[in-house]
Image (cartoon, rainbow, N blue to C red; front, side):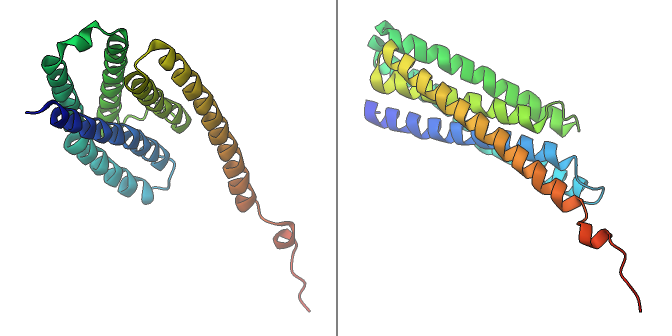
Length: 196
């Protein structure tokens, strides 16, 4: 098979893998937040979210991760000079960390399947940002093909992640204030009505 076809298929698997990694953690967050719902909604939401998790992970997540690896090593096999480039070794290290992230997602999936929700939704939101950092690192390494490109890319990614975390924090504060005002009866409704 021509090198460009192998590279194209590799990129398709990479995009699919990251889509699964981004969305699976969102499903973890939704399943965690479902545990705060009432006794009627909680089991229905949890069951549906667990089905969505399983299908996403085993139909897209694992196949895309394996496909990324197979076609990535196929490219190296077709062009072994990649192994003499420092940026390629940094990319492979980043992919190694990405697989550790993938395995942590697998652990959380297994825990939630057993009804164990160890992580808060805020902690899962922060965990979700790690995939963004891996994505930016790998893309900058591959496109710029230099370690300085990685440094600038990482700096930009950390700034982006910091802004995103502040936005999530502000959103949570405003959402909590909104729900508090909805739950608190207004002063007008607390006043007794006059009867003639």
